[in-house]
Image 1 (cartoon, rainbow, N blue to C red):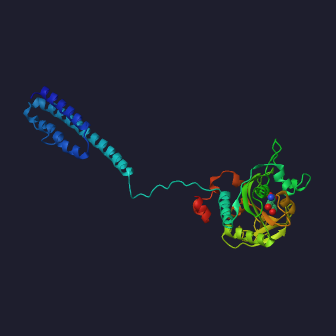
Image 2 (cartoon, helix red, strand yellow; image 1 turned 60 degrees about the vertical axis):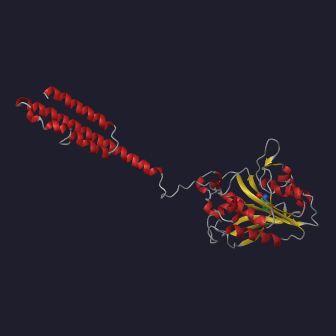
Length: 357
Ligand code: DAH
């Protein structure tokens, strides 16, 4: 073959190599093909062996042509090897990530519960076990239910104790859950055992211990021969169940127009254990449960004869109780929607809560 034919032959071999390598699938296949082009008996190898058959003056040109072709084809093989290696490692990785049964599963995010809701569920459960029903009153109330029927007439100074959000239509946002008492008396008549958890509103400046929106839970028990002893027993049971331990309580006289006698029930501080801290203002006690024996006037407003029936009522500060139970020091956290304040299901206690999940 003359030198021109040799050039054409070399061009064909390079083109062949490019075509074959373009769709070579694996390193293994590449190795098999390599000898066909670059091996001693391969296409270029065989031509290398023919250099001596050319006239001496042409040999260097033939050698150069063959060397260049050899370099170009070698480079092609190297490039192909790199391409296969990188695509193989990607496909290995994607195969691995497709499914690995030994990996731990991805835990789905469970919703958490607001501390007030958690405590409310617990209280509902405790009282339901005692035969109490759970009542809900409206958040928008009339003056009658919020004040008058609770023995707080228009000119009574007790109305000033509770700064009220008045609405344009003459109604108001309930300042406490006590209106539920009168509504329950009207709805059921005696005997009554009910609680009324819910949101209340006061026109107040907020700080670490005051909020304009908070939760209470009203309680009412009316029957023949209900006494202060019943009141104390139920209150102690409630706190014991919520805190999962015996809590110390003390009763002080307290004034509320709708009860007579009225009490402030204090509990030993669950944050410092009674030794004195900022939450209990160094006293070791926190006011948690205002309560008392239902005032005869309130019974009359509810169409119940005070000579035949007596009862006790209480107005539990649900928000305050939740703060105590979960060690939250600033009441404003409760309404800020800060997810860190929510109670994960694992920290909820009580069968009522398990059941509701
Ligand atoms: N409603 C009262 C308040 O918000 C709390 C209260 C006190 C409720 C004594 C009661 C009670 O049922 O007996 O300040």
